[in-house]
Length: 596
Ligand SMILES: Cc1cc2nc3c(=O)[nH]c(=O)nc-3n(C[C@H](O)[C@H](O)[C@H](O)COP(=O)(O)OP(=O)(O)OC[C@H]3O[C@@H](n4cnc5c(N)ncnc54)[C@H](O)[C@@H]3O)c2cc1C
Image (tube, rainbow, N blue to C red; front, top):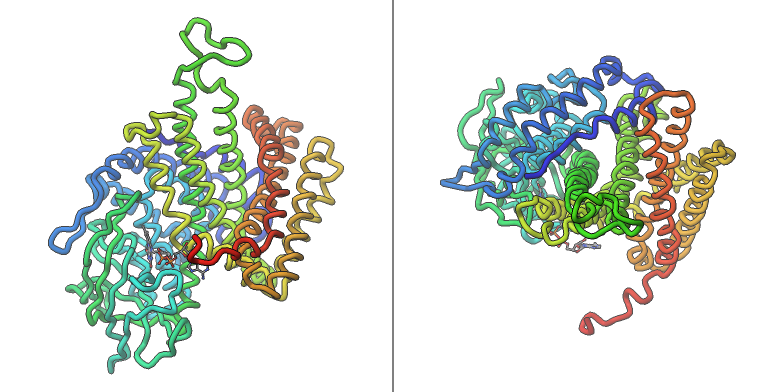
């Protein structure tokens, strides 16, 4: 049996003491979100996820979803747990109050997202998909469709999905063949098959609202001919009343490696009535609203699984007795010391810890950017935040999910053979973690997005702004006695990133395979640089608080120790990543395909 405790204390530190959310910009989402409200949301979120979501995690994995006579049933207890989520008003937490949302900060929504996924990834995905769908409808649908769909989706009464993938088209959505035929009343008949659709059908809500990418008859080939449609499973009348089936059915449920409690469906659309959102043939633009939102959510999934895997590994490391400490027995009255005394076990746990807390700061900052990008009164500031968020989303999605897998694997290693045995739950965390580097655009595609599109956006203005942000920070703090060593290491990482960027500009244009071969390394170099920026920032703040006697001294000292671990054990990887970037495509592409 696994356990879970939500990291409320860390979130309070990040929100109130480190990022000081709500105090810098005059954002409407903080009008209602006083410190007390934020703390109450974190504490209530913790309660729901610890007490209601997590106890169903292992049983949900074991039981999985079933499909019988066209109806999908979720594991025992899921319906009741979801109802508690709905009753608590969680679905609309960060959404537009005009449609029934509560308009709270996105940053707070991401914190709650982490808790849900740590506690029960499969269950968390049902409302997670709804959130992405409501964002796309809110951004792109006309007022009539928004009024018809959003209120019931924001209560959680209806759920949402995203239907992109087809058997012949995954990454390359230009290959999709699902058809949309225009009817005389302005709606469309949608026909086609989608695969791998998360939360495609289930028994948690009375209706499922699918967002479907399809090609209108006569539209151009490729990406330029794709449109986005709302396709409800059950028809929805103008007054919002739910009717019979709309030609939407589940072909089958996928058998898969992890997240068993989330239904992954083959979806068939047979002349299903659909409603265009956004403009004809501009579906990819609209879908990106949903995907940006979803990619941040997926980034937090990587962090979330690392957190819960780590918590359980720490408990095990303190209980399991094997061998003696290298520096003399620590528990002479016992037959052996707990494995927590062994430096190699510590190495694994410290690596996870340094990832988790650094990633949480990095991720939460992106939530702040999301709020600024939507709500800042100054248009220029909104645009800067939109661009910065676009730059860092692929970095967050890829780095946090890759490290989520690595952390879950390290946590399992702490258990030795017992981690490989189902009962401890460590193997479920590893199985569940493995999907995040794949969906929402594989991590390889995130890296290509970073070097191929995001670096060049605004003629390189955004990447220069990021470098400037770090340069200013380094300049401000380089004489900080306690942090100067780490500031110097951050400066080195920044230099490596700038050199790698220059190399890419010079060599990626002349041979695009250089950009393709280096993208993964370049992304990870940027991720570590950003982690270093947040770690040294947290360390400086922790030192200040210790000096003024604010906060919990032992919590703050542990931040400083973990920062030192990060800089000495993880940050040096930036040197090798720079070499790898500059190795380019030569040896990557040299073998003939038949020689593999
Ligand atoms: C459990 C699960 C849930 C999912 N949920 C959803 C969902 O809700 N909705 C939905 O629409 N889809 C969903 N998906 C689909 C998922 O998004 C796709 O699997 C993913 O986008 C990759 O597509 P693919 O599997 O066809 O792989 P492919 O596109 O065939 O890629 C195979 C490999 O080639 C690489 N590759 C492909 N093209 C390039 C390129 N141009 N440059 C470099 N490398 C490249 C990829 O990175 C990957 O490593 C889900 C999948 C799973 C397994």
